[in-house]
Image (cartoon, rainbow, N blue to C red; front, side, top):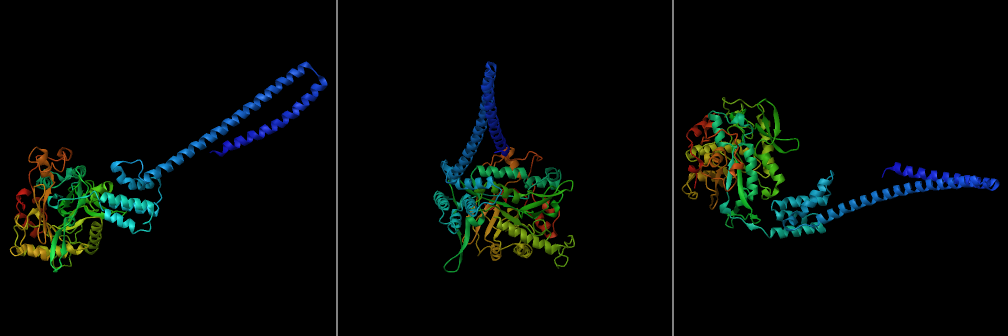
Length: 554
């Protein structure tokens, strides 16, 4: 309340006291005069003056009472508002006033309310509850319960209520059918359609095999609305050592609520090749000032910026807003070739002037050692952020057509130039062109030396390309899975009324980017052959440029 109001009231009180004293003196003086003069006119004048003074005093008293009442009313209103806010927070924190599925988010609602009402960091218990709810939102109820039980607040009533809530929610989960998990894949996203989708061989190839940023964002939303949840290859099955010392691929249980279903997403060629520079794609991956994975991009005017210019930061942001789109925090598979380096950095030995493998056709990278360290930092951040890493071969070669000797040499080069920059062993192989080493029959070590070579190199998960909704094969020591391309060719095919391979995943009318030149035919392989090493070019010239469904294991 304004202090000047109180000051004003005090001044009026003092004025009343002084005027009251003067009034008594005047009245005594007037009475004395009246007793001496005893004049009738004086009597009437005195009476009128007395009434006037009484009216003025009453008027001042009424004003004071009004001010006092106004102050009291404001204080009462403020007290009621503050009390109601406190009660509301208590009720929300304990889940009252919620029904059905809302009760499942009561802890998160309380945490969000606390975080939004203050700029200060939440207290330790609230921070703990927020972390636990984040795990639970991603269906990792065991992780959430373990986090709470292992904390210093394990006996706290709010923490106990959260644990009970998570145990109840965990009991409603159902196992997914691991043999019916779809896998969709993309290449580097188009940032600037004007520069990428030109009317030449390169632009036509981009139009066929690439996806635009708006399309990818719309696809994520469509998948989310249909109940899909992102899982990793290692969620589907894992190698377990048996009692006799042998290894066996064992299926795992993916536990999800009713109506939710798993899906795998992968991105090929996350290398930001030299031939793509200046064509409307990101330049390279970086960490921003907050340590978040972003992309550097140079626009048509040469302006350089850092932002969400490819799948990783876009997917990160989507999951930040929709954590229930991710199973246990898992996101996507990022696959690398090697011949142009990794993540936009020219780290390959063919760019190292000091290496015997240096290719004089390449511009030597004077910062190659520093760039290799940068890539190590970035790939470590990717894994910590929930991404799986995979091989896409060193030279983007066709595993169906090439000889065992060629594949062995290529795999050695990938291990030497790419695997050495990654934070741990890589056991996922995403075949370039979807070209598998065998038809649909299970791999047999006795009859397939290519499989033996890849197994000895540490690979256990193998993905071809397939147009069917899903294709998964479990072997004694491997998993194979078919992938569906969600690129310009496949999207336009459905959008234009042709064969529809995507309706189970999306409403194509809400996804297709109408900025694309149409019609879009199948044109894969020519883009990368434009500026690669001689070995890569040779590999691509022998690659079959058929549609993915003709180059599959189905």
